[in-house]
Image 1 (tube, one colour):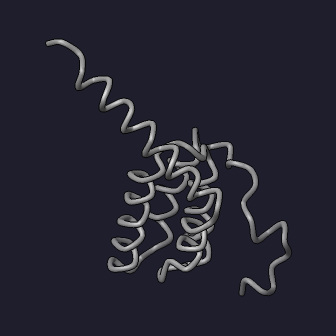
Image 2 (cartoon, helix red, strand yellow):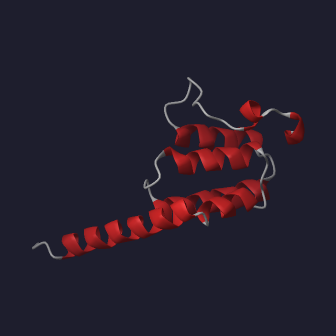
Length: 112
């Protein structure tokens, strides 16, 4: 079906007005569109992994990749793997790790 859609229909560019942010939209789509429990669980684990290793470094790009994966029923995670292995994501992972390490070092050195 995706091959019959035009480029503008295939990618989500704008957040639907009824959602406050892309994370909320992603969670809604996951709940409503993915009906196989094993697919849903696999996607939830990937999303949680991305949240843990990237954080908010990429802003909405991470959530848009998640939404795209849900809309195309990418239960195997090919789109998500491509996203997480992109140069931009690798840089974001490094930045998130450095920021987390610095924050942990700062809080560990505070007197009680």
